[in-house]
Image (tube, rainbow, N blue to C red):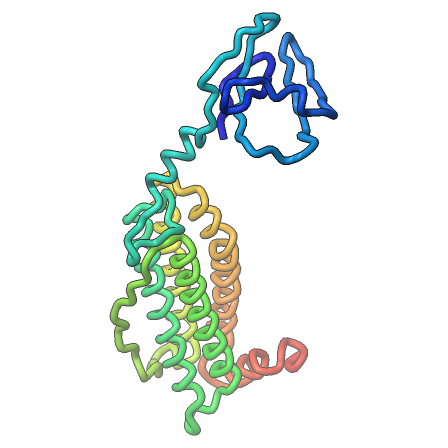
Length: 264
């Protein structure tokens, strides 16, 4: 509520008479010629009253002291939608940011789908690399979790989640020169770098639209974790290149399955 500036206040009933004699326990605050009088009524009355103001020692009352919402609040109230299909929570959230989030959701689901296909391949009875199967299964769940986190954020900002189609991934990962383990891990590294690039693009869209909240969300929830994933998988690729396609792959798989202590 907004109260127009005045240096002192008095109470009038609606018939024009003063009610000051009916109030007790008054307190005043003084600061640079400003006097604010607060009175507490002794009992309820059968008539209404108005708050009026006067300047300095001038006893002439200023009529028309009104209470009204702050002008900026009124502007925000005008922006509150009334249609049932329009989000009430949406504020300073552009269509471009909404579309970019939906694209990132699609990226995360596609990567999750590829990792799930890798899990299925390495879990076969004639491949039987349980450590790699477990690693790619966990990676698939993690990427799906990223997609769901983005979906929750989209709803939180008042956007609409629109899921796109997912491409069918490879089902065979054997490679004549590299072997299946190295080939799959190099593919995983390339996907992590691609995901990071897409996240940076989402961040740039948010920055271009001055969406500080979205930039903070991407930085806090995704970018650091993505850099760490790239570093970890890069090390796995380097190790698999050293061990070749033979017995060393089994030792690497055991390390993934039981931890580094298993092959120490």
